[in-house]
Image 1 (spheres, rainbow, N blue to C red):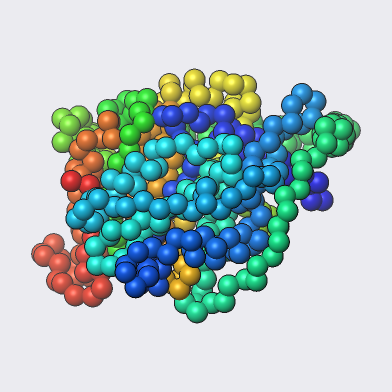
Image 2 (image 1 turned 45 degrees about the horizontal axis):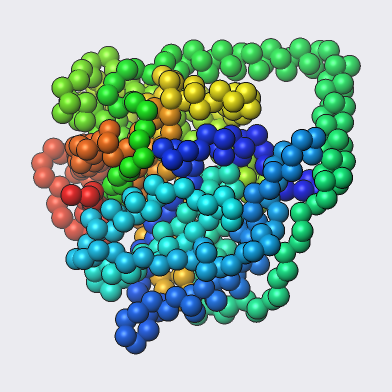
Length: 480
């Protein structure tokens, strides 16, 4: 049965509770667009027209006009309610990329914008239109708080704002009036009903002792397996409490080529991406004079827990897998084989679900932020999302590419995000700037691992890779 009010789940509340200036918990997506459809004859951004046309699309995504509301004692968890002072001008914004407008300048501006917290007094999202990019293109930075949506839900939200054709008609303007929050009495009754239903479920389990015992044993085994397989992350210079500044680097490749490299070895694309991350991390630690023999970093890999029944819901339904990345295998083929063997052995759903409940419970105790800044369970974050296979358009302007920026937090100052879009695959790394001034070493190591895997796939030789094709090699860009 659908909930009467849009309450935040324990995972959603956790993402709000751990947030501070050093740990923003919003999702970032950088879009590069064709410029002319959104510029006037003088080359200026048609900002007011953009705001008007996107405002009409907000009816497709009601959550973007809702604000966080904390009802208080005995009235249940926080919920999303209509923002009585909603104004699209507070969310669709403009900034100029510094000259000369290259990708280095774009990434620096994006890093600065992503480091700033979203204002909780208004709906937790922003669209920044960034002008001044070379070659007449535009960039758009989308910021959406993670408490509203996980990666898959965020893609659906922004897809609803964009179009499948350059000449798609705008929705008709519809009047919108915010509904007031539910009364204190209604929230009290709703909370009481939910607590009663939870109690009834607990009693029902108690009258079925065999099922209860099986459930408890299964949960215990899952928890033990999760803890045993993680075995604690190695202590390296990669992990320390994160600061407030960020760096972003992007590696690009063709989706078909990545798929061919993976399938030729009986692995998945994400196994290949984890191999590139392992190769880059190896080079970074060697550059820092740290040992890699016997070292296997632990990657927290995001796993969607969404079923077919909640595929269209917002909020968070994401767990994690803890995957070892061996750094003592300089050969990319051997490293890929080891990583693929590890991921094949994991029963993803069970492990991911257990970690979701553990994180939610710990966060409710108020200890999560303290523990996160002392954790040694994981070294880095990684997520892999499948984006639209065909181009999308922002008010007639074609989206040329999309790059994601994941959250950092606790002692995890490296976060990798993979997104496929219209035949391209972008692997981005978002890092703590203070901890990773040498990020280009890691990025170059990822590029080297990719060149080795893709070259062997094409020619079976170690010689130079021949040029040709739209993506003859992975293109890497990082701030200078």
